[in-house]
Image 1 (cartoon, rainbow, N blue to C red):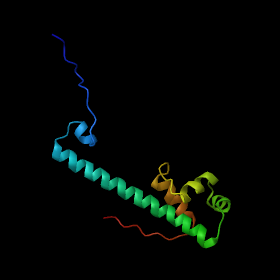
Image 2 (tube, one colour; image 1 turned 180 degrees about the vertical axis):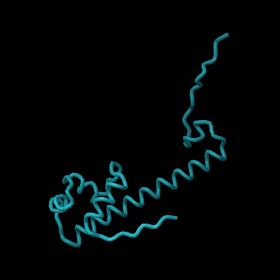
Image 3 (spheres, rainbow, N blue to C red; image 1 turned 180 degrees about the horizontal axis):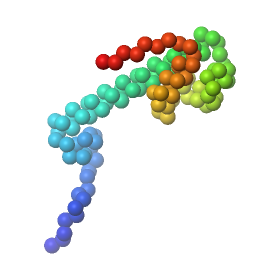
Image 4 (cartoon, helix red, strand yellow; image 1 turned 30 degrees about the vertical axis):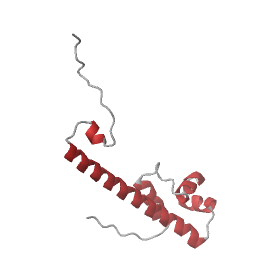
Length: 109
């Protein structure tokens, strides 16, 4: 007879919450909520990056000039323009967009 391990191996599923043992209905709800929040974060990041990009277009700025005026590295501007936003927080992007002089309205629901 072998002794059972206190840690059973978990097999991966498409739902991380199910993998960690949440009941199926709760796992589905948690996954849907996580997906919704991630989607909202991505949409906000894209909107903030779009504000920076439109500012550059309106002022006919080169990447170099925009980077200089915003106080960031050229690589940062390049990533923002190409919408490669994973490494930026919402705060990072908001700070850049704010420095463009654009006005913002924040609504919490």
